[in-house]
Length: 149
Image 1: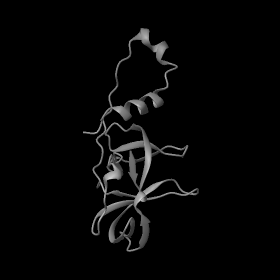
Image 2: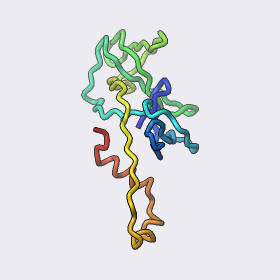
Image 3: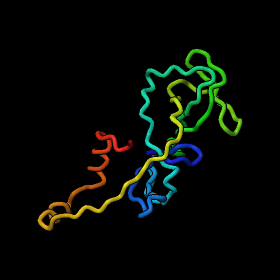
């Protein structure tokens, strides 16, 4: 999932409140968890960048990452293009020269819907599940199942 900050940062959802208005998240690379408004959470873009041929006027997201900051995606618009190099203008009016591999199509912002349900656990299964790594298993399941409809 990605959280709108004004840029998009990858995060993992850990929980949500009973009204599903706030979700507990942990940003990738961070150890602390924080609650954020659920309307700021979207599914990670599943766009295949290999077939994306940006042109002037396209709304895009530009990847920024360095040793001091986690990877983020900033929304902008292509205003110039030459070969695989683009000039992107961002919402604040700044411009940057960006190579194609740092650009993906803008997927907009459609907030995720969250569901929380308690499932009764049979008494004979409780001991087995005490050592179960839920976080790892749910991450693996989410990679293979579309839970965002």
